[in-house]
Length: 205
Image 1 (cartoon, helix red, strand yellow):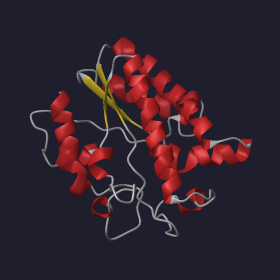
Image 2 (cartoon, one colour):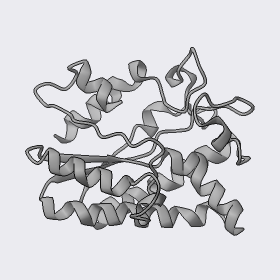
Image 3 (tube, one colour):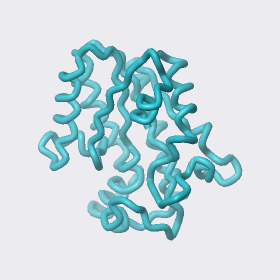
Image 4 (cartoon, helix red, strand yellow):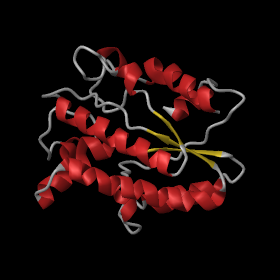
C-alpha cells in the first residue's frame, strides 16, 4: 500500500521508501536468528535511509491471519494469549529504532479479506494449516490493534489504522468494496483504500 501511495505521487512532497519482508511477523521479531531475518533486514534498511525522518511500522496481518493461530495449535493455548508475544516483538523493534531519533508511527493490521471457504492465492499451503473463519480472524485483528494502540501510548508514539473506514457496520467484517475483486488475496484493494491511508498520514505529518 505505501509503495502504491508513493508510486502514484499521492503524498507529495513527502517520499516513502518501503522495505517489504515477505511473511514478516511481529511474533518473529522476538527471534533475531529467524529464517526471515525480519529484524535485521529492517535495521539494515534504516541505515540505508538515515535521512528519512519518519518510520512507519506495519506488521500484524500475518500474525492475526496465521501465526498466532498456528502457535496456539502447537502449544495448546489461545491465539489471544499469543498477541502479547507479538506486541513484545513490536516493542523490541521500537527500542531498536529509538536511538535513530526518528518519528515513529505504528500502523494497525488491516481487517482480514479472505472469506470462509476461499483459498488464499498466496501462501496457500501454509495458511490452510490453521482452521479459523473470517469472524475469528477479524476479532483477533481488532484485539491485536487494541494492544498496539496501548503500546503506542506507552512510548508516546502516533498510531493509525483504517479499521473504522473499512469495516462494514452490519456484518462486523471488512466491507466488500475494499476487497480485491479479481482474485482471492489477503491484501485490501490498493486503489480503494489508498486515499484513506493518505488522509491518515496527512493528518499526522
